Length: 199
Image (cartoon, rainbow, N blue to C red; front, side, top):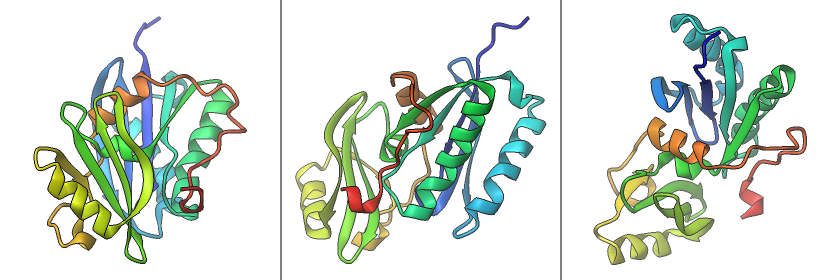
């Protein structure tokens, strides 16, 4: 019997859908797909395709890492529902991370921002495993001033609403690094997402 640990990573908190397959501590393949308003229809088929293409059976999985937001109600719940269902049905380890972590550059201080509408931004700041500023909603003016005050920080996420030409994908390796340092979710059914209203 193989000692390899396969893991599935996923996030649908923003308009991009992210899935990845990892083996032990290495990313085998990752996809960032732009399917606004169709993630609920396409996530499961994309997962099946990813596993099939890499000759991995869902029963070969040891764990799942899922982004829990912040994001819209519909977006966040899609990946969470799928991850919780698979983990519960197959008794897999489930790890939950702040979705903005997955977009950060794990090896450098990072500012991660997404459009929260109405002149606001989802905002977080990380340096490796250290959260310099937890996920929150801030005014766009605050976000721009923070960026100006930290010129050496890497900008990640989607900052086009701030007039900045930055639109990045989830960094699969960062996502896996954060998942690897999280505690396993004990109460899978009770795991709650982070919605806009919670920030």
